[in-house]
Length: 187
Image 1 (cartoon, rainbow, N blue to C red):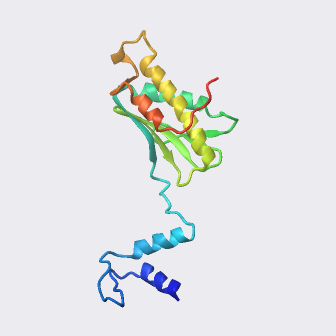
Image 2 (cartoon, helix red, strand yellow; image 1 turned 135 degrees about the vertical axis):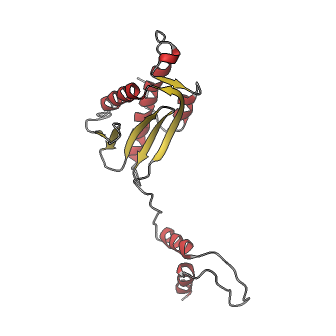
């Protein structure tokens, strides 16, 4: 009976309720969402994230970016990583914006690199990516950061203002790297 009362109080669309023994108003806010969240969590459910809204994994501020050339370079790199650690790990597909989306083999998530004039960011799509996806995404994104680092700094024969990528902060790539959990072993 107590469970039914709690269920009624938590799911009730009323905006307030009174304690019978004291007659005082306890809450002036709606309990509908509270009740739905409580019941969902009580029975092991989780609030589902919209899979069409990306999670920004990292974002690197840039002073200037040669968008087309850098996007092409990163796409070639990402396609080269598509069969690591085994064949068919990532499925590359070109998106509507001309970028490259990499879908993980288990279908739990998708990763893309978005390049604009003033930022480079990695985005993840998927409401509940698998642990394997998260690990492989991290390794992939570390390799992308390595490539960005080479492009921004390891080209002595090209003047800094003519490089494909010019960072706002010299440690921008290192800050992005710190947001990633795993890194492939150095061989």
